[in-house]
Length: 163
Image (cartoon, rainbow, N blue to C red; front, side):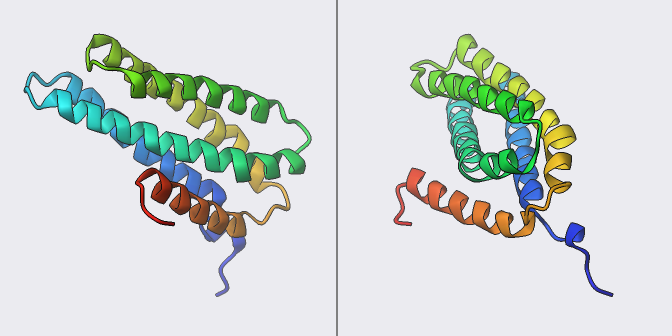
């Protein structure tokens, strides 16, 4: 029985996997916020840095590859405009988290608000943008490969590894 195009992982499924992974990190961070252990502060900083790195790379591959292709393929681009504004706001919060010198209540608040913000953004992508993208003639299976390759490249750069 031949597999249909829908059965193959596509660009949307790759992006959604990123969403789920980051959601798990935000959940782990919230659990650390309740911990009284002395090691929780270092773990929170490390996890916040990981969240910021994942979101930075995710936003970049969306902005470089996914959004421009979808923008050309659909008529109503309001969703894409909103997504780009949401990315800009998230990047501002990410910068505040990365620049913070103390892991204190304000640090926790920024990570929590970033998580809530990302939840909202993910719901819009999952419920509105991804179905519209899948309804176009875009080759989202091929785009998945492009997104994965670019993500790997960006992660290597951020980790200080040669690409």
